[in-house]
Image 1 (cartoon, rainbow, N blue to C red):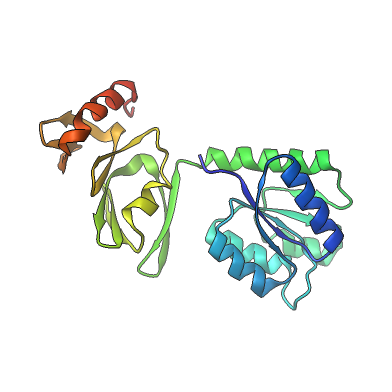
Image 2: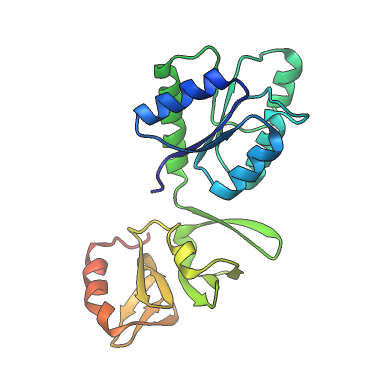
Length: 232
């Protein structure tokens, strides 16, 4: 499970300060903050927060609704933080997909309850894995993965239906997986424990595929297999 890491998009300095104080007080990490579109999009792309608090009115030509469309496309969860309830704004907001709304003025309790509900929703989707390859974005169920294979600074994500070559290292992709169900059986391979059919001396059979097994990892793999439920 990823740690909650919040990015703030807000154009009122006092509100930004209040938000940061409330988040820090409750041990919630802050990825950064901005009051305009271009900077916010650039920093969000770099920091990849788990949640964005998103004001609608900003110090730029594009506003929070425009950022919301970007976030939806990138599959980054967000909560609207706004005092705007006019018909025109609401009609634009209906075209987005926020996890909720925090209406100004807000209380710390109200802020935290909204963030808690959003975090619960985010964690319900933690078995998904999103990545880009060949100019397209994919989101797959982690349970469909058979194994990962290193390829220089790239990584193969292999499922029973398709093989994806992604521009990230094996380490980077493995860190996005639910560690309860995956195991590094070799320096160049991670396997889905729920897909393991058999364990041999120097390989693991994952469905119908034989994946290399490092000698020093066999004992630990056997222990992990004993505690891992199989797929229905």
